[in-house]
Amino acid sequence: MPLPDHPILVVSYIDETRTALVSILETAGVAAVPCANFCEAENFALKELFSGVLMDLTSIIKSKGEEKIVAYTLANFFPTLRVRTMGAMLVPMSMPGSAKQDKNLDDFLRITCVAHRAKRLRKFRRHPVCLSTIVNHNCNEFKGFTLDISWGGMFNVDLDAERFCVGDQVSIFMPEFDCTISAEVRRIKPWKIQRHPPGIGLLFNELDETGENVIAGITRTSKEFDRDRLTS
Image (cartoon, rainbow, N blue to C red; front, side, top):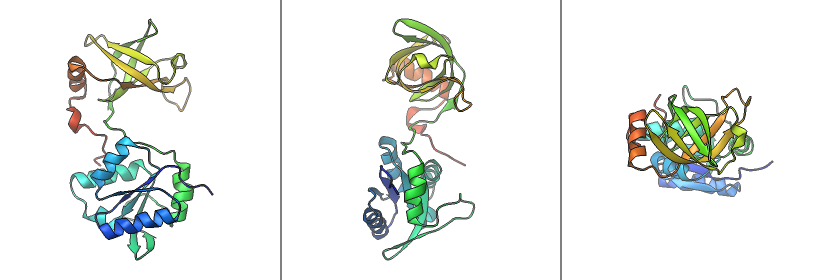
C-alpha cells in the first residue's frame, strides 16, 4: 500500500519523545518535520503541504492558552494520531470527547493520510460577507458578489466561473468602498459542483493602504491577529 507523499508534522515538548517519533516515521519510510511546540507546527503548516500530524499526548495535555487553541486547530484540519511512546514503541491514545482515530501507525499512514489530500493551513480566517463586485479580466467586466472574504483573499460568486483559469490575474472593484484590489485566481468552482455556489477563489496580491483599510473595516480585525484558528 502507498505511503503519504508529503511529510508528517511531529509535535512534542519533550526532546527524547520528539526524536523517537521522528525515528519511527523515518523507519516506516515517511518524511517527518519535528516541532518543539504546536505554534512551531502551525508556522510550518502555513508554508508547506503536510499529510498529517503525529502528536505526543502528554504535550497536548500540558498545552495551555494559544498552544491549546493551535493544537485543537491542527487536529481538526489534518489527519491526526495522538500517541505515547514506550521506548521505540508508539502507542495510539484516545482522549475523552476526541474524534475517532486509527488504532495503529500503519493504518494512520497508509489509509487515513493517503486518503486525505495533503493540505496547507489557511493563514487568515474567512469572514462570511456579501459585497457587490465587478471583476475585470482581459478588459471584460463581470458582475458578482462575495461569499466570504479574508485578509488573504475572497470567494467571488460567478455563474460562469469556467471562463477563468487558475493563475489568471484579475482586478476586483468593490463599489461600496470605491476600492479596487488586484488578485490571482487560485481555484474554480463550476456550476452544480458539491452543492456550492459557483465562482472563483481569489488570492489578493499585495494590498495597498486603501485596500488594507477596506479589509480591516470589513473583517473588523487586524491582519496579525486574524489567523484561521478554531476556538471551540
